[in-house]
Image (spheres, rainbow, N blue to C red):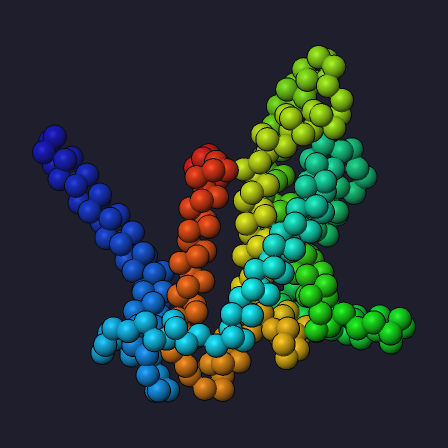
Length: 277
């Protein structure tokens, strides 16, 4: 009987391992194909995999507009992460701890951007910017500020959704003890509350940055020549003419993103936060 259970456990473990391996292959094979194909530089209108030769020419010939797009995407993403955190953290505190009338309706309101398609959101902001421009003479579309505001709107629900569960598990007695010992409300928040909810803040900020960095439908409505984000530049480049340098730039972005994610997990405790959810 014990040998039968052992065989059954072995079969079950093997099946789970095969399913997990298949999921990993499905998720990462496109990235592997793009990265490998980026080392086969040449004038062709298609992806070559496996690569016929190995060269760094595509990386050395990444056009300036792609580099500018990456820089713009990073800066807009950071602005969106900071802006969404500045709005989302106080909102999560108020929704979790405050005795607010209509709290459920307010929470639903914060989730509204998640339900709106990106194309509709981009068009709505474009029309709003045109209306504001007609009234004031300043048109936000095609500017860094206009793009950042739209991305903050789209990213704030991710900060609220990441911080609120951490606050729900937070022990208020720790803050009460700090205030009993003479700490002010601001000192209590800075020294006690914020460090303990930091994993949720980091997670929400990271989600906000990724939403902003990878956005196409909003940015494509609010961009103009010279102020296009990296995803928009890639979309337009592949729509007009295939170029291996796009694959090279995409590979650089993926590698850089993985490094940043590993650093954040290492120094912020985000890996512990994920395991305990």
